[in-house]
Structures are given as structure tokens and as C-alpha cells.
Image (tube, rainbow, N blue to C red; front, side, top):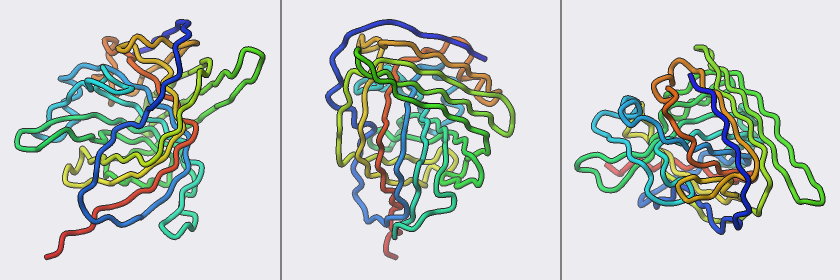
Length: 263
């Protein structure tokens, strides 16, 4: 169980590019879903041995060496899916949904490169469960933007309460320095429950790197979190460190599944 607060004031320049977790799919794809989202990423450095227990057999977690979340080995992604449609643009069921997902990166002997794995998902029912490891949860979000003579201040407050018990919550309040728009991002997350399964995401996003302690970028404001989910107690045992925060107020995503190979 962990409760921590980080605060500081800085006047760093705006991040110029925060296209995250890029990869290239080298296979046929079928569009299955479109989403319009708000996102916040909290990137942590947690105990690697505890994180390894959440990875598939044969996979070793790594600490990301570069990029906006450099220095972290676990990313908590908070998605507010404002609109979910199918490939034809018709509303899905559910047509909107908040989600908290845990993502880690790893390597394995005999496998080229690094892969990202979704290790846990908490979502409001009805469960979509794309990776075979979702758990029902109550999720609340309170977000806002304040305008004044000194510029913009953005706030986010999330509370996630899994059906199995416990709570993860965070509060974010920071001065906006400037967003960067990026297009044609690609990510390819795999399931930690079924490492043969993955989806392919194509996305455009409006994002800002709020803080990264590895890069010396301090938050102009404050962020605090409380981690009290028993299933995650090995990760959040008081030794973890919040390394980076990324705010993504606009995230436009297409979800593809890889086509089955011809027999």
C-alpha cells in the first residue's frame, strides 16, 4: 500500500514530440474498432522481480532507456473512452467507457526486439476484455481546465475500485506549457495472459510531457497517488518511484487485429 505526493515548480519548454510506444506491423490487418479518448499516463519504476511475476513465462521486464517515459518499467494508463464505434462507425456496446490498464515492456530469448504487454485491465462493466485479463471496477473521473492571466491549468482526479477490492487513485494539477500534435503513431500491445495474442493500434494524439524525473523535467504543479489494490501490492510496496506523467487530452485510435495467416 502506498500514498505519495510529488510537487515542484519548473518552467521547462514544451515537449516537441510524445508519440509513445511506436512499432510497425508487418502483416495484414482488419479494422475492428475506433475510439475517441482522453488519456493520462503515470510511469513508474517498480521492483523488477515483482513485475516479472506479471509477465508471461520466458519474458524479462526492462526499464525503458529513452523517450518520454524513460526510466520507467511500468506504465499505468488511464483512458476515458468518450466514443467507441465499430469498423463501420456504428456505436459499440458499450459506446463509452473508462479504463485503467497496466503495461510493461520485456524481452525474451529467441525473440527479436522488445514487446509491450498488457498485464492488467480494470474496466467499468460490461467488460470488453480484449486481452483476456480484465476485471470489473468502479471508476470515477473528475477533470477540468482553468484559464487565467497566467495561462492554463489542467486537473485530473481518478478513483479506481476493482471488484476484488482495494483502490487506486491519483490527483493531478499542473500548469500547461504546451501540447504537441503527432500523427500516424503505431503500437502493438500483447496480452500477458496469452502472449500469442496482440492488437495493433494506429493513433493520432495531442499530448504533453508533464514531468520526467529521469530527464530532469519537473512538474509545474503537483501530482499525488494512492495505491491500495491488494493484487498490486508487490508493485506498490513503498519502494516504487513515479518517474513520468504524460497528459493526452485528445487521442484518436483505430484498433486492428492481425489477419490469420493463409493455410
